[in-house]
Amino acid sequence: MEKSIINRVAQSALVTIDLEEFYSPGERISYDLKDNLYKGMILKEKDFRQFLNSHDWSFYKNKHVAIQCSVDAIIPRWAYMLLTIYMEKVADSVIFGSLEDLELYLFKKSIEKIDLLGYMDKKVIIKGCGKIDVPIAVYVELTRLLKPYVISIMYGEPCSTVPIYKRPVK
Image (tube, rainbow, N blue to C red; front, top):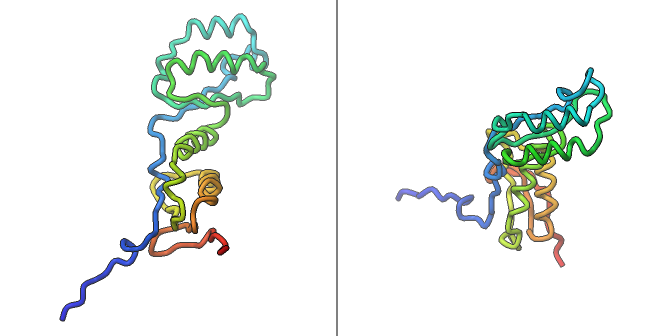
């Protein structure tokens, strides 16, 4: 008699979340305001407005943009605001911060769309390794969002998980 192989992982009530599925496609770029500074120190409003009106913004089309200033200069807040107005006309998304901040923003925006009620009373595995470098903060945020709904949260692969949270028995 031949015994059939039973895939217990596939038959279990475990639900796997692969954070790579929440990756927002598109090129990520940084815009550095240092290039708009006079003598590398001062932002002149007139010159900056002239730049904004004459610049070819098509380069930023369909891209995710992180706005920052990499030099120690006093940049008025309105400069970032004005730059955002022009940038958002063509870019898919615009944030203030680094490329790492941008990646975190995009992932958070994506996981906030999860229907958490769909995970009510489920045992969830948040998949670990993959091809995309998912920021640690995204794992933290997803754990925080899921905790009130799930029975348990595990990290890793269905065949090898690390327990993270288990709802206390009432």
